[in-house]
Length: 330
Image (cartoon, rainbow, N blue to C red; front, side, top):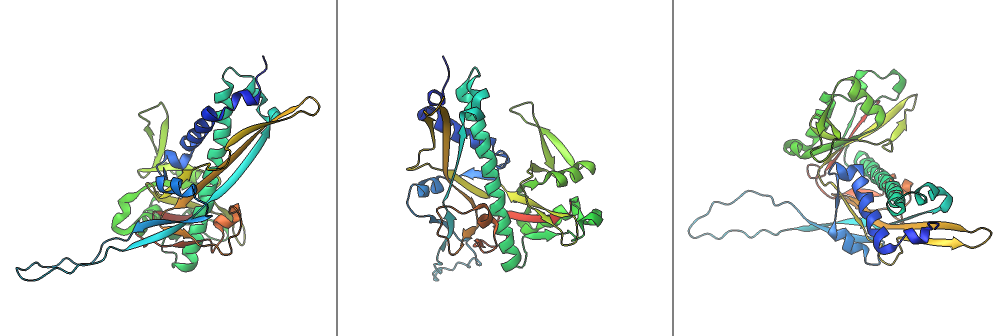
């Protein structure tokens, strides 16, 4: 009996499998950068394109010397908010695109894995676009206090001083001051990773749950992602963005809400064509920053709007923000 998409895509089985698998395939989730947020999940069930994401300001000020007669001053605990943005994306495929998976021994898992990998890669891209936008805001409005830029506009003439190194990575990490130890991961383009390998700066740690060797750099988990920004130098060559992260510095939630996450359609014309439609309603939010794009009338931001200057604004102080950029020529 021929296996059809409608037989494979059973929502009660397929939808949760793809959603969970896409998250676990995400490199940033594996590195502990991206974390699930129940708050964002609940907010996505509402109707607004943007929603408040509250947080408490740090407690500060000197303590008081206690006396037998004096009362302590009661200081306010101050709440503030970030603004997160709902995102909606979709993708459809025809049966020919999935024919190899349909003919396999376990078509549900085969097609689910393929769809999950697609969305895992997409979510990684949306994350890096958002971080690029956050860094653009930092350069424009916060005196680049989260950026170390060692690049030159003449990338073809770049020297070791313009490329990633332990010294410059330490400088970037120390942007966090006495909270430097909270930095746990670094994301780099493969060109930058090549420099690290050539300089024998990569160590490998055995994963306790598998036979995989996990690359680390100066004790940091390494994410290699070629969707990280590659900016052409004004003269020649390229400048590469690398990002350092605190654990859990990007919040994520996916909630289909009123939308059908995965559904099939069969066009009966001719020999008939089966199609699989997938939709994702989600939020990817760098903690410590607010979405401030105006005007913002679309149902979902475009890729360019995620990284455009003016889309994000920092609401945490620099030491609490969990993202730092190191810009180099490799």
